[in-house]
Image (cartoon, rainbow, N blue to C red; front, side):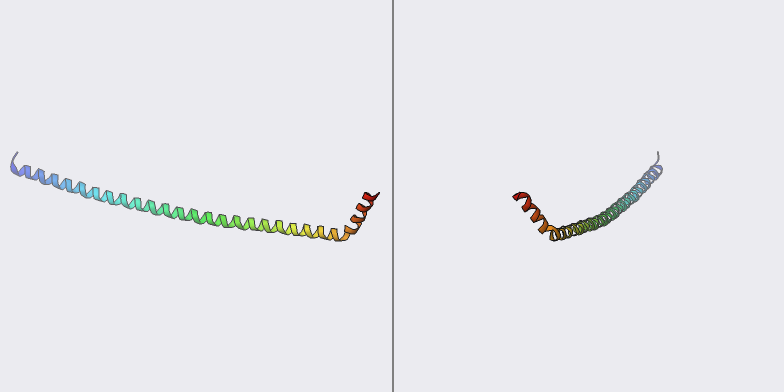
Length: 103
């Protein structure tokens, strides 16, 4: 093989190696970009899930407060009813108990 052909082969090899390196750099850049986009999507999804969970917690808390308020209201109504019944009947009950105990 003559010197010129060998130089051409070496030049072609360098060009091929440069081309491979350039393409590898492009591939590395694309992979890094995809990884960055993947991380951004993960963060956005996580943020969305956290917001949704916060909204659900807030709604559940509101429902608990409403249920507690309703229970308290019912309790107050019942206690008021019992107080009224006691006020109306306590003297009669006392007399009935006295009669039962004494006779």
